[in-house]
Length: 177
Image (cartoon, rainbow, N blue to C red; front, side, top):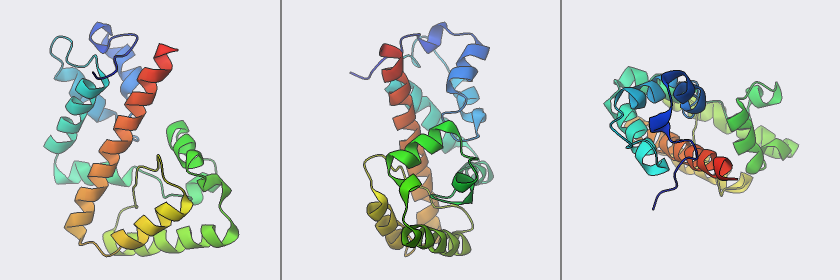
């Protein structure tokens, strides 16, 4: 059974729902808004239900909107991290993978791969870092640089949806304690 939120989303007003879930997808509150508009009874009260509704909103969006969603994500171990400009969620996720502890060589590798990836695909590399370490992320970078643009676009959206699922699960867990 999918975890439930302590405060059921079905009982929230619009402002509370958006304050709670508007940041699940990086700088893209339109996804939470679409989920809110598509609510039906208690279909958003579980992590699985809300995540499914949000993924449906992403899938229904135009290619341009999905590209903007991809581009809303920061580079891994990138300049935004160095400048302290990441969202709290991204900062925590990157730190959890040890990206805030890169050696000079690892930081250089991330910078090089970020540049090569953006040059090829024209959007940032996105991976759900939960359960990965720096070496695993660098390996994924190298592998995915071999993808076609269409394959990588789909992979980026898949990874964004995974990130959202992890964020929703963490939010539900944090409200249970």
